[in-house]
Length: 231
Image (cartoon, rainbow, N blue to C red; front, side, top):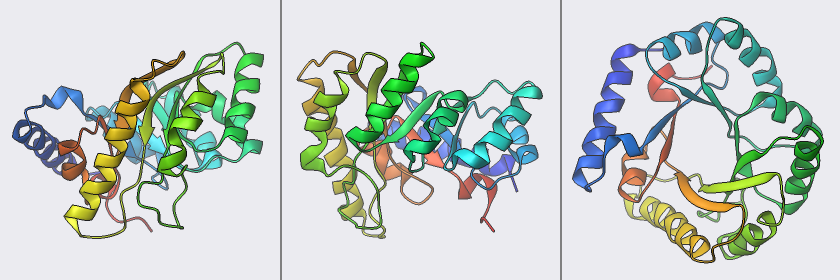
């Protein structure tokens, strides 16, 4: 269940993390990860000041987002989960940003649909910086090549990168994952590709967002610490 005191605590930790590395808290967007969370709880979180939410499944979002919008919720919606090409049409109707673009074939379908509806779509490229086989994302050594390909699509705007840290409590290992993403973004930015601006780094979740902020995260994806353990 959504907890206002937990939200205040998270905001305080974000601010403290930023101060330690000479950043401003305004540089970090808190993305409330609302997968499996009922619309009523998301509404409470919105009323408490969360303006950006992340969903993992298009089908679940299709039932939740219109209901919330009908209640006056004007949040930004990010798709965080793996996107199948047969769900692209619905995804473009629901989401403001797709963070999980991890392959050229998906980008081609997104471009085609975005062109049909005359929309410029903001996307992040997902990178598997941990190398774990259970995670989606392009391999780090292929990220620049994917960015070059994405830059050729007239209706896609690559504005950042996303990663999920390694499944570990080893802070050094986690820092390596997040630092790798930051360095990749810098390498891509240096190419000055059309339709590409490396403005955002989406990395860090409930257990590791402070490390991610230290390495430059602009979006931290918090679910469990806001809404409690999922069923």
